[in-house]
Image (tube, rainbow, N blue to C red):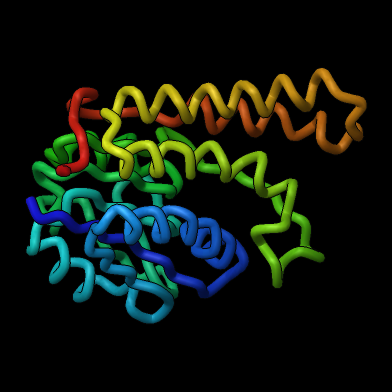
Length: 213
């Protein structure tokens, strides 16, 4: 494995725009910790680019994009990893897929060293008025901050299990914070969706795996 991190950041719709911007935190952290960061942003998030960089065996692979049980997508929803065609590129790697349903089949059959993803849809809400400044969106923060915690923990050298634990703890703190405060009914109604993400975030493979130092 090389001391490198590969991530995809397609930005062709509101969902991928948000995920891309919320990825800046762990890009900055990885660079500060002297990882080579292969940042496939926008039109670079295509299958040819992904396969090429996966061939260099990065320590950590992060996918941001749409997907389902058999596929993870990139720019304009081009399939990047397809079950039965090229999932072998993920073999022996640590993978985090911020993508719907991919842990159900693709992750389970990918032979990744550790695959962290979602068994069902990954859901988040946002405030349309914040679309030009996603990092100031407090609604999106409730959903995306716990996922960022998982990635930053991995980059800091914690195991998959510990990183998953920290992410779950932040989900729970977020939920408790909403329920214990004098918050709006709208925020309270979001709790079931935050819990949904927590419940469906899953690890397949080695929980003791670490990103290479």
